[in-house]
Image (cartoon, rainbow over all chains, first blue to last red; front, top):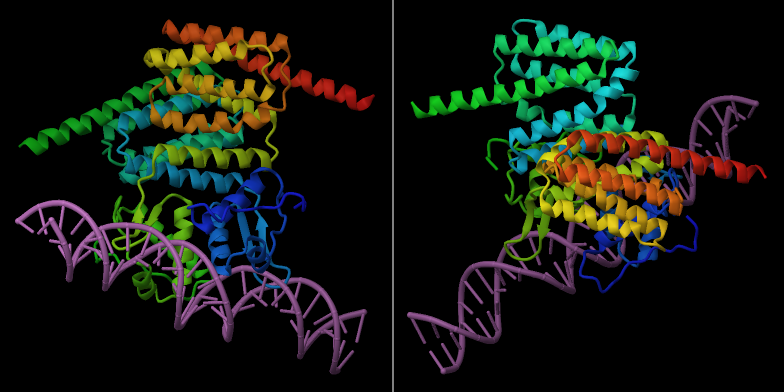
Length: 251
Length: 251
DNA sequence: ATTTTTCATTTGTCTGACATTTAAAAGTCT
DNA sequence: AGACTTTTAAATGTCAGACAAATGAAAAAT
């Protein structure tokens, strides 16, 4: 870090010191003053720089570590280092956030479902163009799994997620994969509310096969159409489950 | 929290204690054992429960606070409470994450641009159906701003983001807004690399107007078409900037 | 030259203390 | 009794100092 840009905090602010310090360091990282793999000053040095105790500095650093902005290493020549945020880190963060967001805010099944399929349709055309044999093989394998009898609803849902994940990854755009896979995976708890009958699984497998075929044939329009039908069918399933529950609760 | 589900950590694990404790509490929140607005045990109680010192407990709590999973309040009847993750919190987290991801991983302009417009095209049809007069007014207002002479490139980009944000919000699906607005906003630093000439701004304003018109007329197909052209035009602009720089560097 | 030992540095954890904030309880006045 | 003030207890925020554990580098021994 260039010495010219000293990080400073405002002692008169009402905010907690560790929050301010974390924010100051975060700003330095976002602003490019601290670059990837650069070592931060040691905790003792940060104490002097910000004129606070070590506990306070440590709490600030833990806040940053929780966001994968830094990593720490013990021992001589150890310390805190600016962490290169990987797609994997970002992805797992997004899954957690999205999952909690959906479960804590009573997002309706319809809303989440609509978002999920809208996003998927966005990358289906790209996937139809770029998919590799690997992506196709994954999709086909998941279809086979979904056809097995005796599969639990959870396992069926998990396979569904894997199928759609392969579809998204087929677009070969890491940014899209990161954004969409999070949304799809976060929806899984909601999807688990649905009980899949043998009949409905058959229908879903048929639609998945149509999607895979379309992707294989580089037919974006067909993929889009199948996805739309899958969207509608999923909503129908949900409505049936809801109606069945309502009838049961009434009796 | 029901007493049956005691949170436990493994003293033999190599992981830091504060990480383990944070994970245990996080799991309890995700698993629904701790519900929104529920109060966690006080720091002293957590010390006893996990058999660690207060510093360690505090570092764990700061990790959770950094992810907006809990909030803390001082004073009697204060403590740490499970936080309801708001769309706003999730949104700002996503912007930070996406921004860092793009800047730290050398994501190409083309990749980010493709992802951005693919996502936008996903919600344009919904926006064409559901947009309110408010959304339209925002879009028109931003178009007016973009037409002003003497606007800096940064201001032009910011207005561009606001325009597209309104387009996304028009879909009236908070999940989509949260996902996409983050992606669009995170792209702004990349977009700022482009220098917009008067001519190119004019072209963009024209396309924006076409999009707004299509949304106003509930014409999803026209909106999609205009967005596609905007995608292509943006990439053209980028190529021109790159070519100009290459030529300058050679001379 | 290679291996072992020592050592200094840095983060992780513990202990104890005090400051600050806050709501509730106790007290006081009308 | 009711409204206002004061006190108190509980909780988080901050500080200070200590030791443990890890780790790389230097020093020493072979």
